[in-house]
Length: 106
View 1 (cartoon, helix red, strand yellow):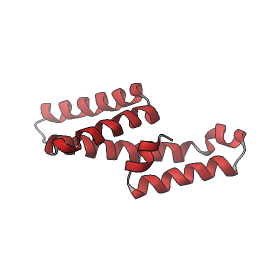
View 2: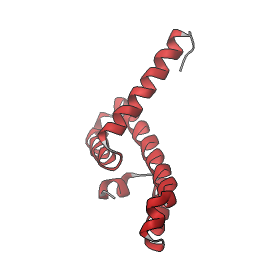
View 3: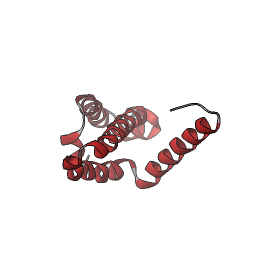
């Protein structure tokens, strides 16, 4: 995993990352490829995305952390992939638009 991600993620994400490494180290390639380690990878991606969102929210409040946030953004995109990130953002925007149309707040 990208070094910046390891340095800047929460303890929860670090523990999930360690579980993923253990899964890869202790299981055969066949097990890994047949969804064995996939749930852990998915959990890690979700944890990283939650931290990414929190950092993006913080970006508006704290311009001094901008460089750190941008480094994290780059690392997140490297781990998750830009296309998946854009898809997640699109889904979030669509959900927010739907709630606004229904007159509900976020």
